[in-house]
Image (cartoon, rainbow, N blue to C red; front, side, top):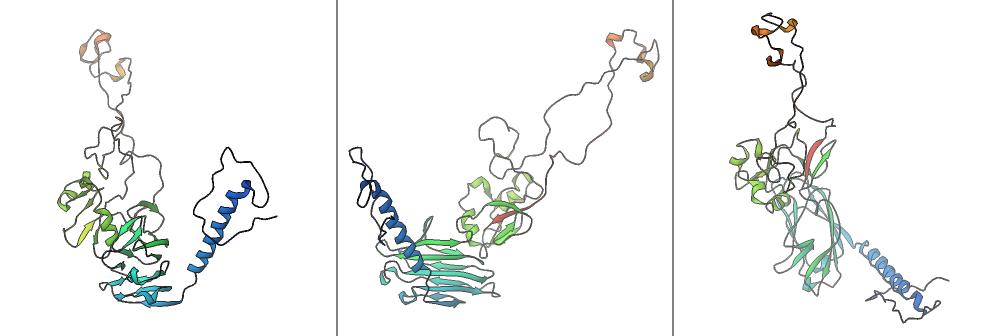
Length: 327
């Protein structure tokens, strides 16, 4: 016989105590935890079904102010060609909404400046942390639920790089919402979410453009660009990644010992033995078979250089990928 499930949210899950008599069957203490969890699961399933039922689908193509009557709508954010125009969506005042009202957004085609979801003053969107503005790039979607008692918009689901900004990855092609780590300059207006993240880096990893261009030591870091409209991403082309030493005492040769600091190629110090018997085949002054007329073979030394071998750099076997950065 199955447990009877109720569509209700249980405030807590009972903890079996050492004094409880383990009784099965309907109302038995042994089934209490499973019953409470089953009720929670049934309630969550019901609520998720409600969230998937939108009143209507509307397209937004420019700055828009929403009110509480738009709760339950799915909005497509559409800006295919107007690169420099904004698409700011002001969210309804939560105090005018019902607790649990939903708003959903899908960026169908957003080129140039991304769309932005903006709560009114004093209210926030909770996405990992409270945010006064959430950017939505092309091919991303996000669903918000009104938490009226706390006057916040809770993110209940999303698809995209919202919490994956600034991840260095590698790929066989340039992927959606990534840029190549090629040392290029990016517009702060076109990539505001990435620039927002870059500004959280330690000062040694976000340098001035003068420092960045002063030598290869700094080209794995970010730069502030012109200081107003753009910023620069690292140039990681043809580079290997290596963890910083962080006091372990193994890698002591990195001149710029910060995230993004370059280190030149090197092979560990070593030597090669080169032996000769001192016969006159290598002699340039064959007096008793030794160069320069030296008679005592124990005192004779002569240096010889081996033929060159190897290529243009020191490297292990590898496969090439495109160095990318998520935004």
